[in-house]
Image (cartoon, rainbow, N blue to C red; front, side):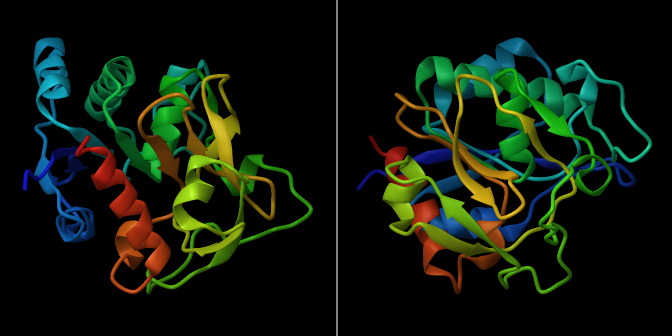
Length: 237
């Protein structure tokens, strides 16, 4: 049985000038029958194109904030650390994945990256910029495997087809979020404060991103397992 080769976007440690990886991303893919491979961090267009053509699918990981210049804003004081190399590589790789119809699964920053790459914008800091009558905690304390708030799933969406429920309890660890959604993406889940928590791109094999962290909860949470299973299975076709 052939196992799909899945490229996992690297995490970057500024202080140590090193690449690193959370084991949950890798183990969840392995558990569902895929072979995860951490990609090099590169801005070389030819290398990125070669990666896009080589792998069966891509997991866009969490990490740094995205440079607000990519959505025509200046960075505010509450914007976090940026990584220009990640931004360049991931925008190019996402666009190639869309063009080639390669499965792409985004988690946390991954969701925000999909949104910005497709022409949307972000709240640089949810507590500072998002007005809502219903306040919820988007940055929980450990353990990160436990649920923090609920999200409402859009009926008949890809996400709904995967998890089979209209309300999902999720963990949460982020300070940025989607402000403007581009036309090419559809909201698949929202939190009780109105923040978009998942997006899909219609008419593609598998372009899905979530704001929460199934890599922290996949060992104990069935719905997290379903997400990784659906992603890995889409990479087999």
